[in-house]
Length: 440
Image (cartoon, rainbow, N blue to C red; front, side, top):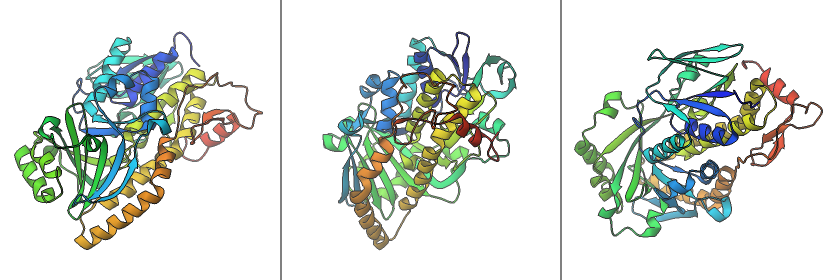
């Protein structure tokens, strides 16, 4: 597919878009990134990147920089509100998965990806809000609110849960759904907590109590990251998110979590700025691509933060699609179909798991909480490592050779399987999938 004039337009400058641009650069494919917001605006709280995501970061050459600015998460701990341990698992074991897990602020990841694009000569423009695009016989043209436009061979929608590209492809929806869970989070200065042991800094700790869920661990260098989840029938309003009385917000959180074990009350009390967010997901889309346009990341499969996989899935998508564009000798339509076919089952399963996990974070009576915690401990001890292996063990690696268009008679043609091994999928199967009802 690749030639000297081939150019990819990428709408979205968060995670999936820059990662795709960096992977395409390594593949010798030109791209331009267009982000609707000003540089660095609205980049939110913190998160973890699991080993299936950090393996992608290593392959696009940014992992070492991120390790120096974040926390390596070596364990996941599950506790009740008194601090009694229900279960502990190794988390992101490099010996098992090839790379560690990291916890950090979204701002740190954004800055790393943005600066790496700049260093590698990739065009990234901000305050470029997409208003429409035109899919023509010889390319695609994107039009922006400032009156400018850009032309390319294909367009990738990597513009998040509120994707403008998705809205153009699927004007009748489905739209993102509120999961019924509110998120509140913050960063506390590490030097305010000399008593916290290194083993707790390098753990993601999940606390389940009668008054709700609270999570914490190391964040960016010299910070602690924490987050709390509350179930609600309606999401925060835009004003509740943008205009926060931080002192009042801390007081409200301390009323809920002030009796939880140390350092939870202190983490809340010593956090200067409280952040709020609503959680949305998209259970499934009828298709991810049409014509010269394809969706990746949250634009295709927005997942609740409960899954711990939003960033990692976006990174997987980016390298997977770049790999297909690098190696495929097929046209863009069949390449997009191969991408969707290979990725859809995995990501939708994780979206569903994220929804399921949110049900265990609601307020409960003390008895209900003890019963819930008993079963959480049992399930994690029995199935925790197996569950991690299924998610973290998925691999996306550069394929060795090109995907030939002469595979009609083979039982399989190239794609990466859900277990991460390279296998093949036939052109006939791709065409059959593309012809299913509701597919473009």
